[in-house]
Image (cartoon, rainbow, N blue to C red; front, top):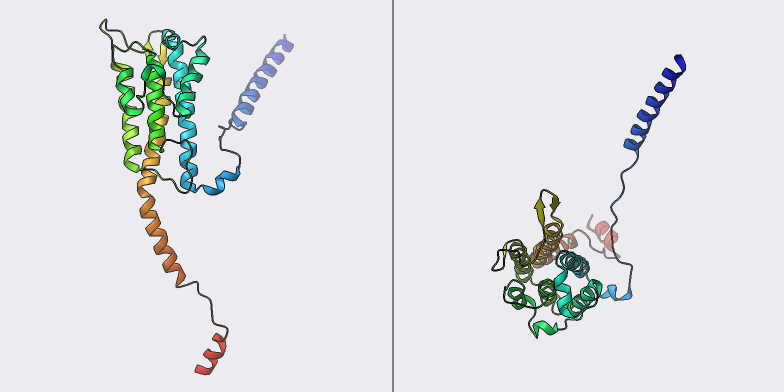
Length: 253
């Protein structure tokens, strides 16, 4: 009767050692997605680089949100004439990146296009219209481009207003309904089957990036003044000595 007990003890020790080894192993690292060096980056300041990375990530967030909206609202992507969901998503994102018009919206872009996405009478691709409006709004803030260089700058108030507009769009997405009381677009879901707040989280990332850029842009001129003062004060302690400094000092004595 002793061997079975011995096996049980060994099994218990193995389980305990496995748990402790798992706890002691280093946690998985979250990847940081920077960009490889390109010659064009030489003509970009640190502020430009931060703004460009924010634009890159915001466009990726919009692309992901569009895919999620299409999956929850499959009838929408079919309205644009695409054969597949991916084709519909590429059509909208390409129009954003190239700052081109969507046929169903005419020349309406940016903030002016946002109300259409939440208009119950709008018969076009509502999900595409929403993401297109937000995307072209971001491009408008960036002066119609996706990358900034030394000659470009951002307006803090425009960035803050863009962040606010995204917040309003998120609220309307959750609350605007049609005449039958159904959501115009299905997004977040809280129910017995489970919770899905992924839309809110992704929109929150966009808002956070815009608000941070707004704060940085608002501080830009103050930091420039502070940098000038620091350089001026430092200059009084970092000076070249004349070649005859020691001789002059000796002569004085």
